[in-house]
Length: 217
Image (cartoon, rainbow, N blue to C red):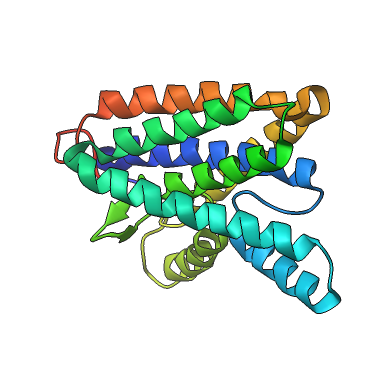
């Protein structure tokens, strides 16, 4: 990680921790479905379809909400131009606040909103219209971690694996915190996620618009 990329990675690590926290809350509330990890939901959907169980419908709903969040976040980010990061994070924060305000009313609708927020947040880091850092799923980061280890042993960058490891650890730490909070607060723990998201949004404002001297894609 160069000095220029440190703020970018700091924001990515913070967002991964947020995703881990929110996903843990959703997983514990839904009893085995996710609001962030759509590969897992796709497998649960397929198993549910094969077995004729109701879990398939819930998984489809969560996948649809996630894709809808990605779509909405992409449009907002496109309209915001150089302020894409800030606009997308403000949108995610708004959705999480609405979800937190609705706790105790309709928990299914809340989890759909959580999934939409996790879809939208993937638009914070883009390059040429595609995700450059995935902050809500870690399979890609773990693949790059293994590849970077191999490169380090064959003459490549000695510490090229470190960002991928830290990204994964950030999500794991966020999930641990989310699980601990759920045991005490149930979905009211979303307010903690809202506070963390607000702090990340504030940090993005400090970084400034794309093309500035501090920020990066």
